[in-house]
Each structure stands twice: as structure tokens, then as C-alpha cells.
Image (cartoon, rainbow, N blue to C red; front, side, top):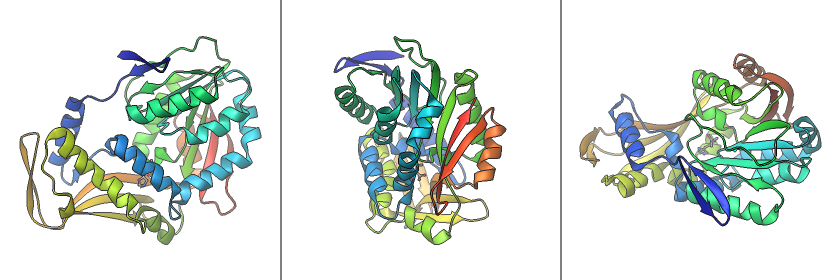
Length: 323
Ligand code: AVI
């Protein structure tokens, strides 16, 4: 691990290397069907596109979760208790965190973890300017790898992990169990996990959320191919792939694909990859849960559900789990 000092903030650096990117892209493109890992959406451009997705009318997730957090923030802050260490996974622009930081009782430190270094540093610097008594300890990493969290200067009474946005839905359910178990192993008894989980709903609403009319989600999806061109010297012609998102109601998941518009050969890191016309490259799953199903999954993963909040329409849920 490297550490660097940026604007007086110490950054723990586990950023994936170009070799990681190369190995994961080649492995995914050699599978049948072909896949690419969704964590690589989030370079600087991808993170900015994701921020734009969160503002879209069709993408109800962000505003619905934010309303649940806003409506229940006093109760959430009471569950977190005084002097907690707040750790956020996939912190991005840390926009939901400000609401928590404004209501938590004397939090000792904030540890944002994100795979996109520029985005992480920008958000950490902005928070540092606004919350000058709070220790901010950013970690640039894929949070699904083994990590040692930085220790805050002041001891915390409790660690609370914040995992908003329904990013847990980007894991297959068996992976979600393994991941929640890993998080439980970072924590001691009494520590907490505040997690946002998107819920099953009509296929019409779900497919609209991932096929927005402005084409931002399409640009976000195609950004994976642009990254391969820029960082791995690949020769994808972006116009020869189209974005597609479908809802598989039986599995309760949105599937995002890039569909090849023609028969084509692409060279990536010196390897030739052939696509036939209509072939799908799977880039993301986004599972949608039922409240009970998610509670069962949490209990099987070493967490006890303390409290669940939803919006009136039951589109989205936020859970406070206790280790
Ligand atoms: C980050 N994650 C929860 C988003 C989702 O809804 O699955 C990523 C995303 N993909 C397309 N739009 C947003």
C-alpha cells in the first residue's frame, strides 16, 4: 500500500493497477458469455456519468433513498451513537454522507473508500473544508479486496459502515452473502451497517431507470470500452456496440449488456476477441430485493436487522444492521 498526502489529507492507496485492469478485462472477455466487471465503470469520466445518472428523472433510486435518509436521520444518528467511526463504501462524491455528518453526535473520523482516485480526492478535500474538526482518512481501493482500514487518531465507540445506493445489488446473491460476511469480519460486536437496497417493482419502472431517455446510462456503459481503448490500447469502435438493459423478473435483476451491432474482431492487450452480430457482453447485474429476502440474507451473513425504513411506495429500503 502507498500513502500520499493531498491537501493535508493522508490517502491510503490500493488503486487497481493497469495490470489488474488488463487481467480482469482479458479474463472477462474470454468467458462465455463475455463479461466485464462493473467496478471498472468508475474512472473519472465514469464517476461523473454516474453522478449524472443519479440526477435523472427515471433513476428514482438516489432521490428515494435520500428522502428515506432525510426523513429518518434523527433515528439513524441515535442508532449510530456518539463518537462513531463512519466508513463509506463506494463513497463517490460523498453527497449522502453530509446529511449523516450533520446529524451524527461527534463522529471521530470518516473513511471514504472509492476506486476512482480523482473523485475520492475531490470529495475528501471538499469535506475537509466544510467539516474541519473531522478526521478524514480516504482509501482508494476496490472495497471487495482485502483491506486494512486506517486507524483514527481518536478511539471510536463504534464503527458504522455506510453502503448506500443499492450497490449490494451489483453482487450476485451468493456474492452478497460473502461480502456482507467480510464486512462483519471488519467489525466488532455492536458495530453497525447502514445499507440501501433497491426493491422489486414493475418492470416498466425498472427498465426505464436503466434505459434513460437522455442516453446517460448508455454512455456510462460504453465508457467501459472507451477505458479499454485508452488504458489497454484496445481498438473497440464504440458505435458498433449498443447499450441494452433488461429486467429478468424471475431472477429479480436488471442486466446491462453491450450488444455487438455486427460481426467484428477487436484487439485488446495484444489478444484478438471476436464478436458475432447480436452477441451480448454482460457488464452489470443490479439485483432488486424484497424486504424479507434482504433481511434473511443479512441474518445469514452475520448481521442482525435492527431497523428497516422504506418510502411510502416501497420502492427502496434502508436497513440498519448490527453485528
Ligand atoms: C452503483 N449501482 C448501484 C448502480 C445500479 O443501479 O446498479 C449502477 C448503475 N448502473 C446503471 N445505472 C446505475
